Every structure is written in C-alpha cells, then in structure tokens.
Image 1 (cartoon, rainbow, N blue to C red):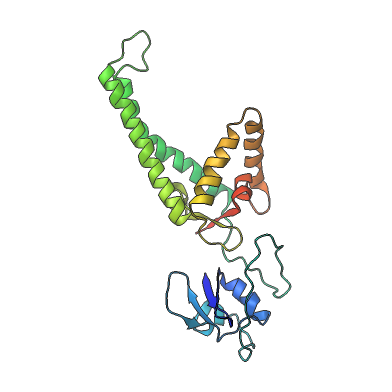
Image 2 (cartoon, rainbow, N blue to C red):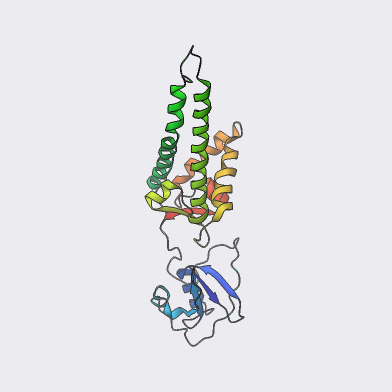
Length: 236
C-alpha cells in the first residue's frame, strides 16, 4: 500500500499499486510523483518502487495532478485500465471454514483444565454433592481461559485482521475498498459483536445466520457480516 504526495501538497492514500496504475493512466500521477510505502517515512518517486514502475507508463513528463479523496460509495470503475486493481486473492471457502474450526478447537483446548476441575468436583455427576472449593476453581479457570482467548483474538483482529485460526491458515480480513487493515471497529465490533447480537434475535436471528452462511457461496465469497463491515477475507 502506498501514499502519494499530490501537486497541491496534500497526501492521498493509502492505495494499492493497482490503484496507482489507474491514477497514472488517468494522468493524475507519474513515475516522478513522490510516494512512500505503508510503514515507511522516506519519500521516494514512484519509479523507485518496482511494483509500480514495472507497470510501465509514458506519462513521466506530466506533473502530478491533485487526486480527489476516494468516495466509498462510488461504483468501481475500470475505465482507465484493462487489469484488475485487486491484488489480494480471496480466501477459499474451505480455508475460511478451517479457520473457524481451528479457533473452536483452540478455545476448547484452553477450557479443558476448567472442565477437568469441574468434573473432579462432581459438577457433572447426578445425585452428588459437588465440592464447593473445586467448583469455584473450575469456573474461575473457565473464566480465565475465556478472557485469555478473547484478549488474544481481539488483539490479532485489531492489529492484523486475523484470528489464531486465520493466522495459522494464512488468511486475513481486510477493508473491501483498499485492502488495508480494518481495525477494531470493523473486524471486532461489526463483524463479531454486532453480527453476533443480530444472530441472537429470536426467529430473525436464525434466518439471518442461515443467510449469512449461505452468502459464502457468492462469487466474491462475502458473507453478510462482510457486507455489514465492508470487509473481505483474502489470502495473507
């Protein structure tokens, strides 16, 4: 992802190399335009970045024009390029399912000690007086496991757009429009909390959940929670 410096002195981005190709083709930028890669502070020309310069352009002589801010509600246009601007490949349905299964297995593994303590306390045995201290310890272990798991998952989702399962399988959540990290609001709040609360609504929640699952069979593999948060899942 790149940020460029327009002729008006303002910064525009971050955008992908494919989007820069569109701007170059439209005469809004050229290989002499100042730019910097995401995570870097040094300004260079676009010609210094192989993934941009190798696209090839004959617009070096034209000064860069101001680039208007992207309109998130504007339709995708391919008027200035014959190649797709999407650089990241959508994650397969099997990888997404595998990540969910892995997350549940890991969560269950972390909770095993708590369930073992409850079992030894007699919590799952009928007609038996449970051991109160062990019960408290068991529920405490379960609560601790949940807190640890939530902390790790929220941190990974916020900083990387990944859960543990997604990280292990090499996929991640990104913004739909510019393929950048979606952050806490989209990756956790909208995709997780809001989507989960809708699923808890009587009757409506069941229908919503089924439709959400079925949406994975769309061509773009975006479920309802992806549309809700304006995200997509891609190969990392």
